[in-house]
Each structure stands twice: as structure tokens, then as C-alpha cells.
Amino acid sequence: MLLKRQGDVFFIKMKKSDLNINKEGTEKEKLTVALGEVTGHHHTVFGVDESKIVDLTSYGDTDRKLNQNELETMVFEVRGGSAMVRHDEHDPTLLEETTEEEVWVRTIQREYNPTSKAMERVRD
Image (cartoon, rainbow, N blue to C red; front, top):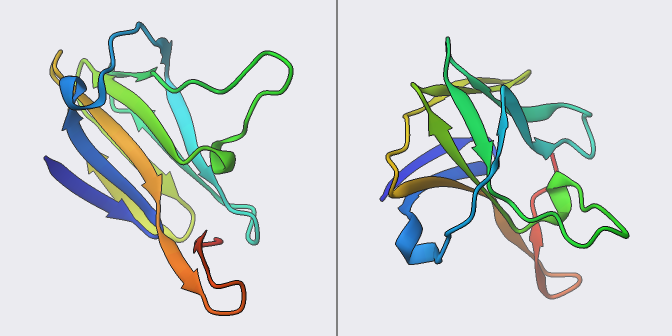
């Protein structure tokens, strides 16, 4: 397992078998993985050179598509080279290519809110 971080966004390289993933994804040149609710900035993964991002995340039913911030995790592959995560306020973060047995999992940092007495997602 490999962990990368950009601000409040974490990327964990894991085995597909650990997550029971066995579906085909949607190939993209870029994938926005988090939207800033406060600043309007976004964390977006771009393929470097000829590499592609394969989005394996399920976005819910067809009645209402969930946005990136409503998803606890996002799952994607990086094929044909590495990928770069970009954000206006952070240095770029390099994500290495995944093998056929691997995926990158995106999750958002959480913090305890003593007022609500609950764990909440960090707001960007």
C-alpha cells in the first residue's frame, strides 16, 4: 500500500482484490476528485503525456448523480504512465501508474466537530 496526500485529499494505492473491484471503468484524460466548497478550487488528476485515468467510481442511481464531495471514496486507475494531481494552492502530486491488480483510492480527511459531536469531512 502506498499513500500520497495533497492538502485534505488522500490517495491510497491498493490491490483491487482488497476492494472487490471487478468492473470496467470510464477512460478520461482528467478526473476532478474534490471540489473546494469554500474556495472554489478543485483537485484534478491529469494523465501525464499519453497516460489515461480510468474512473471506477459508482456515482449512484440515474435519478441523481452524486458529485465528488458527496462520495466517501473515489476509485481510479492510472494507465500508460503516471498522473499528476493539480490544485491552485498546493504543489502538484505525482501518482504512479497502476498495475492490472492495483487502483488508486481517493478519500477526504475528516475531523471531529465538538459542537455536533461527529466526525465531518474537512472543508476546503
